[in-house]
Image (cartoon, rainbow, N blue to C red; front, side):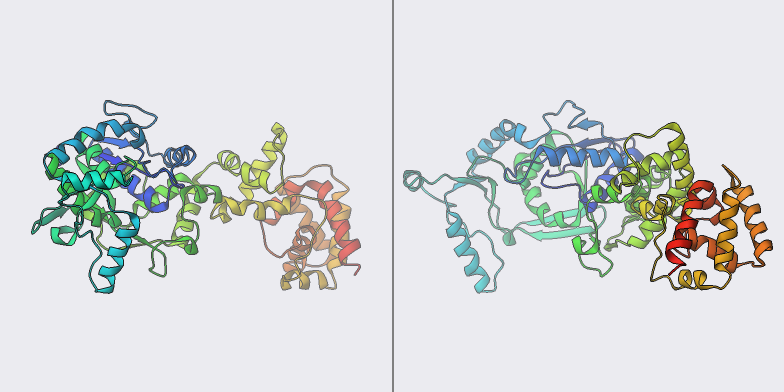
Length: 491
Protein backbone atom coordinates (compact mmCIF):
# COMPACT_ATOMS: atom_id res chain seq x y z
CA UNK A 1 0.00 0.00 0.00
CA UNK A 2 1.36 3.40 -1.01
CA UNK A 3 1.30 5.65 2.06
CA UNK A 4 1.23 9.13 0.54
CA UNK A 5 0.91 10.10 -3.10
CA UNK A 6 1.60 13.42 -4.74
CA UNK A 7 2.03 13.48 -8.51
CA UNK A 8 2.39 16.18 -11.10
CA UNK A 9 1.73 16.82 -14.76
CA UNK A 10 4.04 19.52 -16.09
CA UNK A 11 3.53 20.25 -19.80
CA UNK A 12 5.53 22.70 -21.88
CA UNK A 13 3.16 25.20 -23.56
CA UNK A 14 4.76 24.89 -26.99
CA UNK A 15 1.75 23.35 -28.74
CA UNK A 16 -1.63 21.74 -28.04
CA UNK A 17 -1.89 18.77 -25.68
CA UNK A 18 -0.48 15.74 -27.51
CA UNK A 19 -2.28 12.43 -27.17
CA UNK A 20 0.79 11.00 -25.40
CA UNK A 21 0.81 13.89 -22.93
CA UNK A 22 -2.90 13.38 -22.32
CA UNK A 23 -2.28 9.73 -21.44
CA UNK A 24 0.53 10.72 -19.04
CA UNK A 25 -1.78 13.26 -17.39
CA UNK A 26 -4.53 10.62 -17.16
CA UNK A 27 -2.25 7.98 -15.59
CA UNK A 28 -1.05 10.52 -13.02
CA UNK A 29 -4.65 11.50 -12.27
CA UNK A 30 -5.86 7.91 -11.96
CA UNK A 31 -2.91 7.01 -9.71
CA UNK A 32 -3.51 10.03 -7.46
CA UNK A 33 -7.26 9.48 -7.24
CA UNK A 34 -6.85 5.73 -6.62
CA UNK A 35 -4.59 6.42 -3.61
CA UNK A 36 -6.49 9.48 -2.37
CA UNK A 37 -3.46 11.60 -3.22
CA UNK A 38 -2.76 15.04 -4.68
CA UNK A 39 -2.49 16.03 -8.34
CA UNK A 40 -0.40 19.07 -9.28
CA UNK A 41 -0.41 20.80 -12.68
CA UNK A 42 2.42 23.22 -13.35
CA UNK A 43 3.83 24.77 -16.52
CA UNK A 44 7.39 24.30 -17.78
CA UNK A 45 7.78 27.42 -19.90
CA UNK A 46 11.53 28.04 -19.96
CA UNK A 47 11.56 27.54 -23.76
CA UNK A 48 11.08 31.26 -24.38
CA UNK A 49 11.00 30.98 -28.17
CA UNK A 50 8.13 28.50 -28.34
CA UNK A 51 6.13 28.84 -25.11
CA UNK A 52 2.91 30.88 -25.22
CA UNK A 53 0.03 31.57 -22.86
CA UNK A 54 -2.37 30.63 -25.67
CA UNK A 55 -0.93 27.10 -25.79
CA UNK A 56 -0.97 26.95 -21.99
CA UNK A 57 -4.69 27.72 -21.90
CA UNK A 58 -5.33 25.27 -24.74
CA UNK A 59 -3.58 22.51 -22.75
CA UNK A 60 -5.45 23.32 -19.53
CA UNK A 61 -8.75 23.49 -21.41
CA UNK A 62 -8.05 20.06 -22.95
CA UNK A 63 -7.40 18.60 -19.49
CA UNK A 64 -10.65 20.07 -18.17
CA UNK A 65 -12.56 18.74 -21.19
CA UNK A 66 -11.20 15.25 -20.48
CA UNK A 67 -12.42 15.60 -16.90
CA UNK A 68 -8.89 15.64 -15.43
CA UNK A 69 -8.92 18.03 -12.49
CA UNK A 70 -6.06 19.01 -10.18
CA UNK A 71 -5.74 19.95 -6.54
CA UNK A 72 -2.79 22.33 -6.77
CA UNK A 73 -1.19 24.34 -9.54
CA UNK A 74 -1.95 26.77 -12.35
CA UNK A 75 -5.43 28.24 -12.07
CA UNK A 76 -5.98 26.54 -8.70
CA UNK A 77 -3.20 27.90 -6.51
CA UNK A 78 -1.63 26.21 -3.52
CA UNK A 79 1.20 26.47 -1.01
CA UNK A 80 4.06 25.83 -3.46
CA UNK A 81 3.50 28.48 -6.11
CA UNK A 82 4.13 30.08 -8.41
CA UNK A 83 3.43 27.23 -10.81
CA UNK A 84 5.07 28.56 -13.98
CA UNK A 85 8.84 28.09 -14.24
CA UNK A 86 9.38 31.59 -15.63
CA UNK A 87 7.92 32.92 -12.38
CA UNK A 88 10.16 30.68 -10.23
CA UNK A 89 13.60 31.90 -11.40
CA UNK A 90 14.52 33.44 -8.03
CA UNK A 91 13.77 30.10 -6.34
CA UNK A 92 16.45 28.30 -8.38
CA UNK A 93 19.23 30.83 -7.74
CA UNK A 94 20.18 29.80 -4.15
CA UNK A 95 20.57 26.17 -5.24
CA UNK A 96 22.81 27.20 -8.14
CA UNK A 97 24.97 29.27 -5.81
CA UNK A 98 25.26 26.30 -3.45
CA UNK A 99 26.41 23.97 -6.21
CA UNK A 100 28.97 26.53 -7.41
CA UNK A 101 30.25 27.09 -3.88
CA UNK A 102 30.73 23.36 -3.27
CA UNK A 103 32.40 22.80 -6.64
CA UNK A 104 29.58 20.56 -7.86
CA UNK A 105 28.93 23.04 -10.66
CA UNK A 106 31.13 25.43 -12.61
CA UNK A 107 31.00 28.21 -15.17
CA UNK A 108 31.35 27.16 -18.81
CA UNK A 109 32.34 29.75 -21.42
CA UNK A 110 32.28 27.47 -24.48
CA UNK A 111 30.51 28.87 -27.53
CA UNK A 112 27.90 26.99 -29.55
CA UNK A 113 30.43 26.66 -32.39
CA UNK A 114 33.08 25.14 -30.12
CA UNK A 115 30.61 22.69 -28.64
CA UNK A 116 29.34 21.64 -32.08
CA UNK A 117 32.89 21.09 -33.33
CA UNK A 118 33.61 18.91 -30.28
CA UNK A 119 30.39 16.97 -30.88
CA UNK A 120 31.14 16.31 -34.55
CA UNK A 121 34.66 15.20 -33.68
CA UNK A 122 33.37 12.59 -31.23
CA UNK A 123 30.81 11.35 -33.76
CA UNK A 124 33.58 11.01 -36.37
CA UNK A 125 35.49 8.82 -33.89
CA UNK A 126 32.42 6.66 -33.33
CA UNK A 127 32.02 7.89 -29.76
CA UNK A 128 28.93 9.09 -27.89
CA UNK A 129 28.74 12.90 -28.05
CA UNK A 130 29.27 14.47 -24.61
CA UNK A 131 30.98 17.45 -23.07
CA UNK A 132 34.67 16.69 -22.46
CA UNK A 133 35.20 19.22 -19.67
CA UNK A 134 37.07 22.02 -21.41
CA UNK A 135 36.00 24.57 -18.78
CA UNK A 136 36.04 22.16 -15.83
CA UNK A 137 39.16 23.56 -14.19
CA UNK A 138 39.51 27.14 -15.44
CA UNK A 139 41.51 29.47 -13.21
CA UNK A 140 40.17 32.85 -12.07
CA UNK A 141 42.44 34.55 -14.60
CA UNK A 142 41.13 32.38 -17.44
CA UNK A 143 37.54 33.14 -16.44
CA UNK A 144 38.23 36.88 -16.35
CA UNK A 145 39.83 36.68 -19.78
CA UNK A 146 36.71 34.95 -21.13
CA UNK A 147 34.48 37.65 -19.61
CA UNK A 148 36.69 40.32 -21.16
CA UNK A 149 35.94 38.76 -24.55
CA UNK A 150 32.22 39.31 -23.83
CA UNK A 151 31.47 35.66 -23.23
CA UNK A 152 28.56 34.93 -20.85
CA UNK A 153 28.97 31.67 -18.97
CA UNK A 154 26.48 28.88 -18.66
CA UNK A 155 26.56 26.76 -15.50
CA UNK A 156 27.47 23.09 -15.84
CA UNK A 157 26.99 20.31 -13.35
CA UNK A 158 30.23 18.47 -12.51
CA UNK A 159 29.36 14.82 -13.08
CA UNK A 160 31.30 12.49 -10.74
CA UNK A 161 33.32 9.83 -12.53
CA UNK A 162 32.92 6.10 -12.16
CA UNK A 163 29.50 6.28 -10.52
CA UNK A 164 26.73 3.72 -11.06
CA UNK A 165 23.30 5.36 -11.17
CA UNK A 166 20.32 3.09 -10.49
CA UNK A 167 16.62 3.72 -11.10
CA UNK A 168 14.22 1.24 -9.50
CA UNK A 169 11.48 2.01 -11.97
CA UNK A 170 7.95 1.01 -10.96
CA UNK A 171 7.18 -0.04 -14.55
CA UNK A 172 10.52 -1.00 -16.09
CA UNK A 173 12.25 -2.50 -13.07
CA UNK A 174 15.93 -1.85 -12.31
CA UNK A 175 17.65 0.41 -14.86
CA UNK A 176 21.37 1.22 -14.57
CA UNK A 177 23.42 4.11 -16.00
CA UNK A 178 27.15 4.82 -15.92
CA UNK A 179 28.05 8.40 -15.01
CA UNK A 180 31.06 8.26 -17.36
CA UNK A 181 28.63 8.13 -20.32
CA UNK A 182 26.91 11.37 -19.37
CA UNK A 183 29.39 14.22 -19.46
CA UNK A 184 29.04 17.48 -17.56
CA UNK A 185 25.67 18.99 -18.50
CA UNK A 186 24.32 22.53 -18.43
CA UNK A 187 21.95 23.35 -15.56
CA UNK A 188 21.66 27.12 -16.17
CA UNK A 189 21.92 28.61 -19.64
CA UNK A 190 23.94 31.73 -20.38
CA UNK A 191 20.71 33.76 -20.40
CA UNK A 192 20.11 32.81 -16.76
CA UNK A 193 17.28 30.37 -17.41
CA UNK A 194 17.53 26.90 -15.90
CA UNK A 195 17.47 23.85 -18.14
CA UNK A 196 14.68 21.31 -17.91
CA UNK A 197 16.67 18.66 -16.03
CA UNK A 198 17.68 21.17 -13.35
CA UNK A 199 14.45 23.09 -12.81
CA UNK A 200 12.29 19.99 -12.80
CA UNK A 201 14.25 18.44 -9.92
CA UNK A 202 14.02 21.57 -7.77
CA UNK A 203 10.31 21.99 -8.55
CA UNK A 204 9.54 18.35 -7.76
CA UNK A 205 11.53 18.49 -4.52
CA UNK A 206 10.03 21.77 -3.28
CA UNK A 207 6.53 20.58 -4.13
CA UNK A 208 7.22 17.24 -2.37
CA UNK A 209 6.30 15.11 -5.39
CA UNK A 210 6.41 11.44 -4.34
CA UNK A 211 5.88 9.69 -7.67
CA UNK A 212 6.85 10.73 -11.20
CA UNK A 213 4.80 9.02 -13.91
CA UNK A 214 5.95 10.09 -17.36
CA UNK A 215 6.71 8.91 -20.87
CA UNK A 216 9.52 6.47 -21.63
CA UNK A 217 11.34 9.17 -23.61
CA UNK A 218 12.22 10.83 -20.28
CA UNK A 219 14.09 7.77 -18.99
CA UNK A 220 17.35 9.07 -20.50
CA UNK A 221 16.95 12.28 -18.44
CA UNK A 222 16.67 10.37 -15.18
CA UNK A 223 20.42 9.82 -14.42
CA UNK A 224 21.11 13.56 -14.68
CA UNK A 225 18.19 14.24 -12.40
CA UNK A 226 19.38 11.64 -9.88
CA UNK A 227 22.74 13.41 -9.71
CA UNK A 228 21.04 16.73 -8.95
CA UNK A 229 18.80 15.17 -6.30
CA UNK A 230 21.88 13.75 -4.60
CA UNK A 231 23.96 16.92 -4.91
CA UNK A 232 21.23 19.06 -3.34
CA UNK A 233 20.33 16.52 -0.68
CA UNK A 234 16.78 16.04 -1.90
CA UNK A 235 14.77 12.88 -1.36
CA UNK A 236 14.44 10.98 -4.64
CA UNK A 237 10.83 10.28 -5.72
CA UNK A 238 9.75 6.98 -7.24
CA UNK A 239 9.85 6.88 -11.03
CA UNK A 240 7.50 5.10 -13.43
CA UNK A 241 8.25 5.43 -17.13
CA UNK A 242 5.30 4.60 -19.37
CA UNK A 243 5.86 3.01 -22.77
CA UNK A 244 5.58 4.96 -26.01
CA UNK A 245 2.40 5.16 -28.05
CA UNK A 246 2.99 3.78 -31.54
CA UNK A 247 0.98 4.12 -34.72
CA UNK A 248 -0.56 1.02 -36.25
CA UNK A 249 2.59 0.56 -38.36
CA UNK A 250 4.47 0.39 -35.02
CA UNK A 251 6.41 3.58 -35.64
CA UNK A 252 6.27 6.51 -33.22
CA UNK A 253 2.88 8.26 -33.25
CA UNK A 254 2.99 11.20 -35.65
CA UNK A 255 0.77 13.30 -37.92
CA UNK A 256 0.90 10.67 -40.65
CA UNK A 257 -1.17 8.41 -38.38
CA UNK A 258 -3.91 11.05 -38.17
CA UNK A 259 -4.77 13.50 -35.43
CA UNK A 260 -2.17 13.71 -32.66
CA UNK A 261 -3.62 16.35 -30.32
CA UNK A 262 -6.60 16.21 -27.96
CA UNK A 263 -8.12 19.33 -29.50
CA UNK A 264 -8.22 17.62 -32.93
CA UNK A 265 -10.13 14.65 -31.53
CA UNK A 266 -12.47 17.04 -29.76
CA UNK A 267 -13.12 18.91 -33.01
CA UNK A 268 -13.72 15.64 -34.87
CA UNK A 269 -16.45 14.86 -32.38
CA UNK A 270 -14.94 12.27 -30.08
CA UNK A 271 -16.55 12.35 -26.65
CA UNK A 272 -14.33 12.96 -23.60
CA UNK A 273 -15.49 9.77 -21.81
CA UNK A 274 -14.62 7.70 -24.87
CA UNK A 275 -11.16 9.24 -25.25
CA UNK A 276 -10.42 8.78 -21.53
CA UNK A 277 -11.57 5.14 -21.66
CA UNK A 278 -9.44 4.55 -24.77
CA UNK A 279 -6.30 6.28 -23.43
CA UNK A 280 -6.53 4.44 -20.11
CA UNK A 281 -6.18 1.13 -21.97
CA UNK A 282 -3.12 2.27 -23.94
CA UNK A 283 -0.40 0.53 -21.96
CA UNK A 284 -2.53 -0.46 -18.96
CA UNK A 285 -4.73 -3.54 -18.78
CA UNK A 286 -7.07 -4.28 -15.88
CA UNK A 287 -8.01 -7.87 -15.13
CA UNK A 288 -10.79 -9.37 -17.22
CA UNK A 289 -11.97 -8.87 -20.78
CA UNK A 290 -14.04 -5.70 -20.34
CA UNK A 291 -13.17 -2.68 -22.47
CA UNK A 292 -15.80 -0.15 -21.41
CA UNK A 293 -15.20 1.49 -18.02
CA UNK A 294 -16.62 4.44 -16.15
CA UNK A 295 -14.17 6.90 -14.63
CA UNK A 296 -15.03 5.58 -11.19
CA UNK A 297 -14.14 2.05 -12.31
CA UNK A 298 -10.87 3.23 -13.86
CA UNK A 299 -9.90 4.98 -10.61
CA UNK A 300 -10.76 1.92 -8.53
CA UNK A 301 -8.89 -0.53 -10.77
CA UNK A 302 -5.81 1.48 -11.77
CA UNK A 303 -2.42 0.22 -10.63
CA UNK A 304 1.13 0.57 -11.91
CA UNK A 305 1.61 -3.20 -11.55
CA UNK A 306 -0.57 -3.69 -14.63
CA UNK A 307 1.12 -0.99 -16.75
CA UNK A 308 2.96 -2.71 -19.59
CA UNK A 309 6.63 -2.27 -20.52
CA UNK A 310 5.70 -2.87 -24.16
CA UNK A 311 4.71 0.01 -26.47
CA UNK A 312 1.00 0.70 -26.85
CA UNK A 313 -0.48 0.73 -30.35
CA UNK A 314 -2.98 3.47 -31.17
CA UNK A 315 -5.82 1.66 -32.93
CA UNK A 316 -8.09 4.29 -34.48
CA UNK A 317 -10.78 1.75 -35.36
CA UNK A 318 -11.00 0.71 -31.72
CA UNK A 319 -11.35 4.36 -30.69
CA UNK A 320 -14.15 4.80 -33.24
CA UNK A 321 -15.89 1.69 -31.91
CA UNK A 322 -15.57 2.94 -28.34
CA UNK A 323 -16.78 6.42 -29.28
CA UNK A 324 -19.78 4.96 -31.12
CA UNK A 325 -20.64 3.07 -27.92
CA UNK A 326 -20.66 6.28 -25.91
CA UNK A 327 -22.58 8.17 -28.61
CA UNK A 328 -25.36 5.57 -28.42
CA UNK A 329 -25.61 6.14 -24.65
CA UNK A 330 -26.12 9.92 -24.94
CA UNK A 331 -29.69 11.27 -25.01
CA UNK A 332 -30.86 12.69 -28.35
CA UNK A 333 -31.22 16.14 -26.77
CA UNK A 334 -27.65 16.13 -25.40
CA UNK A 335 -26.23 14.66 -28.61
CA UNK A 336 -27.94 17.36 -30.66
CA UNK A 337 -26.32 20.07 -28.53
CA UNK A 338 -22.93 18.43 -29.09
CA UNK A 339 -23.58 18.31 -32.85
CA UNK A 340 -24.58 21.97 -33.23
CA UNK A 341 -21.03 23.26 -34.00
CA UNK A 342 -20.59 20.58 -36.68
CA UNK A 343 -23.94 21.43 -38.29
CA UNK A 344 -23.29 25.17 -38.14
CA UNK A 345 -19.84 24.82 -39.72
CA UNK A 346 -21.43 22.78 -42.52
CA UNK A 347 -23.95 25.56 -43.11
CA UNK A 348 -26.94 23.29 -42.47
CA UNK A 349 -28.31 25.39 -39.60
CA UNK A 350 -27.94 28.93 -38.32
CA UNK A 351 -26.83 30.09 -34.89
CA UNK A 352 -30.37 30.85 -33.68
CA UNK A 353 -32.94 28.04 -33.55
CA UNK A 354 -36.56 28.18 -32.41
CA UNK A 355 -37.90 25.58 -29.99
CA UNK A 356 -39.74 23.90 -32.86
CA UNK A 357 -36.59 23.79 -35.02
CA UNK A 358 -34.57 22.35 -32.12
CA UNK A 359 -37.18 19.67 -31.49
CA UNK A 360 -37.12 18.70 -35.18
CA UNK A 361 -33.32 18.66 -35.20
CA UNK A 362 -33.25 16.34 -32.18
CA UNK A 363 -35.40 13.86 -34.09
CA UNK A 364 -33.09 14.16 -37.12
CA UNK A 365 -29.99 13.48 -35.03
CA UNK A 366 -31.74 10.58 -33.27
CA UNK A 367 -32.48 9.06 -36.69
CA UNK A 368 -28.74 8.74 -37.46
CA UNK A 369 -27.44 8.23 -33.90
CA UNK A 370 -26.92 4.48 -34.27
CA UNK A 371 -24.66 4.96 -37.31
CA UNK A 372 -22.32 7.58 -35.85
CA UNK A 373 -18.71 6.80 -34.93
CA UNK A 374 -17.76 10.45 -34.33
CA UNK A 375 -19.68 13.70 -34.58
CA UNK A 376 -17.85 15.12 -37.60
CA UNK A 377 -19.84 12.52 -39.58
CA UNK A 378 -23.13 14.16 -38.63
CA UNK A 379 -23.38 16.70 -41.49
CA UNK A 380 -22.93 13.97 -44.12
CA UNK A 381 -25.44 11.71 -42.42
CA UNK A 382 -28.15 14.35 -41.91
CA UNK A 383 -27.81 16.46 -45.07
CA UNK A 384 -30.46 14.22 -46.60
CA UNK A 385 -32.97 15.96 -44.28
CA UNK A 386 -32.18 19.41 -45.68
CA UNK A 387 -33.22 21.05 -48.95
CA UNK A 388 -36.06 20.62 -51.43
CA UNK A 389 -34.19 19.15 -54.39
CA UNK A 390 -32.47 15.80 -54.92
CA UNK A 391 -28.98 15.09 -56.18
CA UNK A 392 -28.61 11.56 -57.51
CA UNK A 393 -25.39 9.82 -56.51
CA UNK A 394 -23.97 8.74 -59.88
CA UNK A 395 -21.68 6.15 -58.25
CA UNK A 396 -24.64 4.51 -56.49
CA UNK A 397 -25.54 1.71 -58.91
CA UNK A 398 -28.44 0.49 -56.78
CA UNK A 399 -29.96 3.99 -56.82
CA UNK A 400 -29.65 4.17 -60.61
CA UNK A 401 -31.30 0.79 -60.99
CA UNK A 402 -34.19 1.67 -58.65
CA UNK A 403 -35.20 4.69 -60.72
CA UNK A 404 -34.75 2.76 -63.98
CA UNK A 405 -37.51 0.27 -63.10
CA UNK A 406 -40.56 0.35 -65.35
CA UNK A 407 -42.82 0.83 -62.34
CA UNK A 408 -40.86 3.75 -60.79
CA UNK A 409 -42.78 6.65 -62.43
CA UNK A 410 -46.12 5.18 -61.34
CA UNK A 411 -44.87 4.64 -57.76
CA UNK A 412 -43.61 8.21 -57.47
CA UNK A 413 -46.68 9.74 -59.07
CA UNK A 414 -48.98 7.80 -56.74
CA UNK A 415 -46.92 8.91 -53.72
CA UNK A 416 -46.96 12.53 -54.91
CA UNK A 417 -50.75 12.40 -55.03
CA UNK A 418 -50.88 11.06 -51.48
CA UNK A 419 -48.60 13.84 -50.15
CA UNK A 420 -51.10 16.45 -51.40
CA UNK A 421 -53.92 14.87 -49.41
CA UNK A 422 -52.33 15.54 -45.99
CA UNK A 423 -50.72 18.55 -44.30
CA UNK A 424 -48.80 16.53 -41.68
CA UNK A 425 -47.96 12.92 -40.92
CA UNK A 426 -46.09 10.65 -38.53
CA UNK A 427 -44.26 7.33 -38.92
CA UNK A 428 -47.37 5.06 -38.67
CA UNK A 429 -49.20 7.20 -41.26
CA UNK A 430 -46.20 7.09 -43.61
CA UNK A 431 -46.03 3.32 -43.25
CA UNK A 432 -49.73 3.02 -44.09
CA UNK A 433 -49.45 5.34 -47.12
CA UNK A 434 -46.56 3.30 -48.56
CA UNK A 435 -48.61 0.09 -48.18
CA UNK A 436 -51.53 1.71 -50.03
CA UNK A 437 -49.22 2.81 -52.87
CA UNK A 438 -47.86 -0.72 -53.16
CA UNK A 439 -51.35 -2.13 -53.58
CA UNK A 440 -52.41 0.59 -56.05
CA UNK A 441 -49.40 0.16 -58.33
CA UNK A 442 -48.95 -3.55 -57.71
CA UNK A 443 -45.36 -3.47 -56.41
CA UNK A 444 -43.66 -4.39 -53.17
CA UNK A 445 -40.20 -4.74 -51.61
CA UNK A 446 -37.34 -2.88 -53.27
CA UNK A 447 -39.44 -1.84 -56.24
CA UNK A 448 -41.51 0.22 -53.80
CA UNK A 449 -39.28 1.20 -50.90
CA UNK A 450 -35.95 1.64 -52.72
CA UNK A 451 -37.62 3.68 -55.46
CA UNK A 452 -39.16 6.04 -52.92
CA UNK A 453 -35.91 6.29 -50.94
CA UNK A 454 -33.85 7.19 -54.00
CA UNK A 455 -36.48 9.64 -55.27
CA UNK A 456 -36.48 11.64 -52.02
CA UNK A 457 -32.80 11.28 -51.02
CA UNK A 458 -30.76 10.55 -54.15
CA UNK A 459 -29.15 7.47 -52.61
CA UNK A 460 -29.90 3.82 -51.91
CA UNK A 461 -28.89 3.92 -48.24
CA UNK A 462 -29.45 6.17 -45.27
CA UNK A 463 -31.74 6.62 -42.25
CA UNK A 464 -34.84 4.52 -41.71
CA UNK A 465 -37.15 5.38 -44.63
CA UNK A 466 -40.31 5.89 -42.57
CA UNK A 467 -38.47 8.20 -40.15
CA UNK A 468 -36.89 10.11 -43.04
CA UNK A 469 -40.25 10.74 -44.72
CA UNK A 470 -41.97 11.63 -41.45
CA UNK A 471 -39.30 14.18 -40.54
CA UNK A 472 -39.20 15.70 -44.01
CA UNK A 473 -42.97 16.21 -43.92
CA UNK A 474 -45.43 15.90 -46.84
CA UNK A 475 -44.68 19.36 -48.29
CA UNK A 476 -40.91 18.78 -48.68
CA UNK A 477 -41.43 15.20 -49.85
CA UNK A 478 -43.84 16.48 -52.51
CA UNK A 479 -41.26 18.99 -53.78
CA UNK A 480 -38.55 16.33 -53.93
CA UNK A 481 -40.80 13.87 -55.73
CA UNK A 482 -41.75 16.53 -58.26
CA UNK A 483 -38.09 17.44 -58.75
CA UNK A 484 -37.14 13.78 -59.34
CA UNK A 485 -40.02 13.21 -61.78
CA UNK A 486 -39.31 16.38 -63.74
CA UNK A 487 -35.51 16.58 -63.64
CA UNK A 488 -34.18 13.05 -63.19
CA UNK A 489 -36.71 10.58 -64.57
CA UNK A 490 -37.53 12.88 -67.47
CA UNK A 491 -33.95 12.50 -68.67
